[in-house]
Length: 552
Image (tube, rainbow, N blue to C red):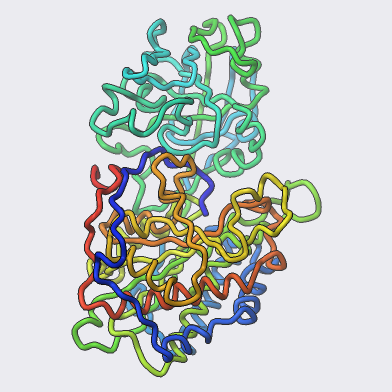
């Protein structure tokens, strides 16, 4: 799962009881037998391969991710699936562009003192040269309804605006929302006028650039910041403007991260140091001019989504599809990590989803009957980079995406909280018979009823819907591949067993997976998929949707 927070608030949906919808789920003995082809042993065998050190953590792009894609393809071909990627192949190729930075031609100075690019300063976006004074603007958020305006007493035109905010980077402007602010305070129509994040305000008011200071979170994750942003940044070529090309009529805002060393140099002898909690806006002494010169060159690399189709049996309904997906990438290898383990194997995240979809594919192939609708399987690349593969597939689909009636997403279903576990990092793990179900009841009453009804008629796993709560701060609905399908008007359901002590750590290993629980969840998802495929009519979107799904 992508480790970032999308800033948003979900609207409260009207939850209708299953009986009111007339959706009674009955599971036949043949369907049960097919689901029982999915076994704990099979899932374990596949996962020990996918999450092995030989895959190198399956970064996007990487040799290990490519090998994993070939492994999926090999099995899909053997089982008789049709390639549904580019030109009937199993791969949808995705071009990745890197505007590689030339360190020899890139320099950073603050008040004439030189700093190392990629160590003390890292680029988040933008290009070009800056020579400008610095102003500090608190957390950078202007919200009129909350009487927040850190720019009231400073002039930012032509300046580098330094800001700091606590929490994970991500969402709007890369600076987290201030405490006490929710998505309800940020109506889409008011962005830039009634409220603005730091990047929006800086762009709209003529700032030379935005400098994000090292909060406690950034200090703890500085290695990841420099690895992802420091020397170069990769983007999906068809989803991003070329080089410094205008986007929305404006060139990209230059956004930089500053290290503790750089920040202390800026604020030494000033009115206060934000790293020590100072929050009042002020102009930094003009002698500490910020001089930044950058040079880049364009490089291209390639990755792929893996796409397969199992054709339905009904001559009419087979033209529609139930989509099932998982992301098969993780975050790769970090040679600079402390300790001996340098590989982030991603067994749970999302090796568990990857092999569950593969096992569901095998169960389909072994079945004596076919579902009425076709089944579309998509293993997405680049989820950890920002839902790249899912966004790409939805914007450049290799099938008629409008014929997808629902998308079922599996991301992290391999862990359980054991009795007596008091580790606070495991407090949100589901227990050995539980799983979080997200979004199934947010968009479509029919999808919600089928999802719940299938479980009630089968293994009766403890379905927990708590992350559908609009007040939940984790925002998991917006943090995995299904979100891009929801943006495309496709009802979704997402299975997830919770974050834990090994989430985005090198210790996310296959020996820590609860394979018996995975088996139960994967079998239940298989039958949910089957019930959806046999519906007389496709699920309708009949719920009050989150504003992010309606204001695009």
